[in-house]
Image (tube, rainbow, N blue to C red; front, side, top):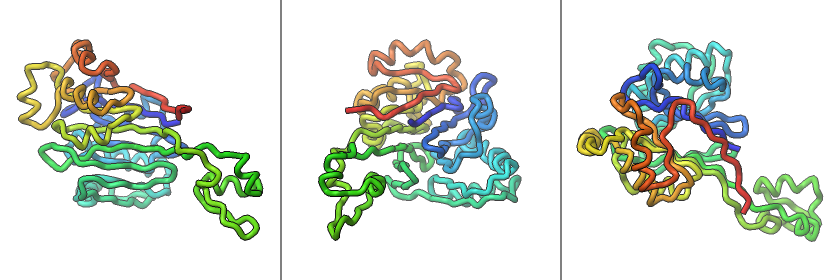
Length: 303
């Protein structure tokens, strides 16, 4: 099961009812944070989730509304006596940017590993899942991210018994390892059925519509996308500053065919995004306008 929470849905500046951009996902004891705008710590506390299990933080880019909450978060994690390594992922220059921010958080009891992105598409393998980064089109280098949890085929007990595999070896085969039985090599493909549908969440903000977003979000369980403006007359402004309108995000979803679209990263001037929902749903029915704390539990689906 993958738990996903939009901690903050605002862009540019925090508001009394809307924190800046951040998303948190939890899977199998691991917690992933994407972006860390001002107010992220408060949003986590309001949600009742914990800072301590965070082991990966991904940054889309280095504008302040996406990273200004990091120094305080690092200090809080340090004060919680964390000693496990923390991995930070972001565009090239990440270590330089974080080092500058750490002028106010110079001493931490845990090491930081930096993964700097430079290619149009990069994959970072983690224990039990992977993170796929894809470049988008903002006025600075910016990436979107997909969290992908694969699911192996069903273990065929009858095949394992047929090959004489001891039950003590079944777990190794399910983990993708080959085992030796009476001098024969038994490989996972010999006892596993077809690969089953996993879980996929795609997240992007601060960009114009580009094909890389469609490819990344294709048939995702959840597509979280920037909707800076709901007002149709602000399309020219979105183009000028390289952001997106609700309708552009919905057209991306229409092409990518995810199960659902969550809009986020609203302009401070957009006070009631729900007013534009019906018009957007005419483009992509499964669209939701989100408020801070919006949460979903995604589980594996049986074929």
